[in-house]
Picture (spheres, rainbow, N blue to C red):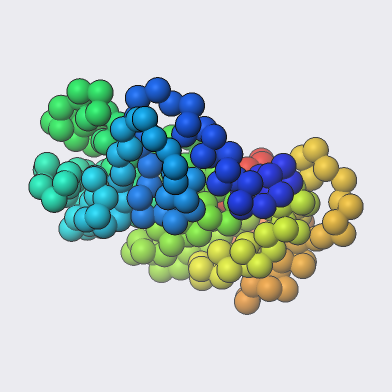
Length: 256
């Protein structure tokens, strides 16, 4: 996602290809992702282990069930055989794949399935990764570090799959360069929730040589609202969100 450095997706793929070449024993990679598979082309002399969404991968999930709240259950499969049930307390398909990857890595170094399942069941998420901050007046408040479009898409799809009345995405764009280069991708991601509230762009280390503003993004997201200051965003949410809603703060800056 750091296109200000890499310039193109092809350069990112080349970088991960070089990274994979450096390992001495094994590479565990997402066999369901075309760009990842492209990065692995020509990698030899080490064990290549895949995880992914489907049975053509070495490790994959089956029978995924969203039980309640943030809890998800699935069967972990290896080479077509069921190893057992995994219970997660973090939401989203991306976390099912993350858990599958973690299981593959742990089992590669000799951890038993029983210990893998126990460890995953005890994991309650990392800070700023769909981190529940509390409930106020029947409104659930969650914060997530997602700031590139792919992360936003995964997080917002996970949120929309949950039994909330309405999902509010409060997004703080991160850097002018990324917002400008990936504007359409951001707009597509922010069209997933019921309502998007967009703050001013966090400059970080940049000057606005791109002449890009939050309103340029908001114009591409139906029914979105652009409000610069967090205090005013808070007032807007207080007036408009209601019981049964999820308010999700998103971004790599201080939006939380």
